[in-house]
Length: 149
Image (cartoon, rainbow, N blue to C red; front, side, top):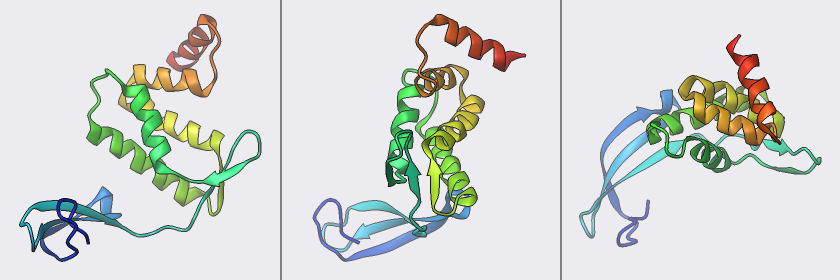
């Protein structure tokens, strides 16, 4: 593992612990050259999942895209980065568990909405407005009415 500070590839593991509900290991390391400390997370490399877009194109599943979408939705909301990461992990786990090779972008959006609704209603509504491509206020009203009954 290369040190992010000096680039030396020799480091010592100081501490290891299981994270992300048992799907990863966080290691606290110390560089043997510059003595600076840094953390790494190790995960099992899953099989490649392809996302089928609305127009039929396929692209590799990218958890960073999910994180960016959620971060836009929770912007200026009282939602911690830890909670965002938790939602990203849950969405990714759901996708991996339920879909062997391909998943539609529609399914990913629905899964994000499922978890985001439990975290923050405003963020959920923001994400939904982009996901459902709202065009006017009545679209917001319909969704809110549908989900409060």
